[in-house]
Length: 145
Image: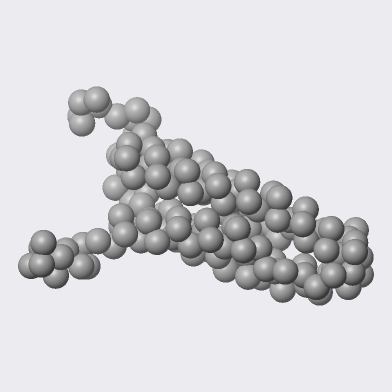
């Protein structure tokens, strides 16, 4: 595609240059929301499986991350595809791990951390940080490579 052609017109003018930083901030918020949700679920699990609920911050950041990563796919194909795969994997893991927390609450087991979604969010965070903050290590990288 010709670089002068934009898919979303005026949206690309304002959002395309900063979408990487927006995704980085959203992933950091998602990780924060994930920690808050884990503590909240650990407390709620004592009251039974019906008391366990999702954290609205994490749900909202999941939705915004999916939309943002798909938009990033239109701006930067390769990096957008990689980030989109990590984000979709994180959301799918979140769905299954939330149900696992409900089962743990129903069986009166200890509530385990959501290791799968933590790993996926860690990979997503590492990759988008690499994409957006590489300018900080570029002089050192260029000197070595």
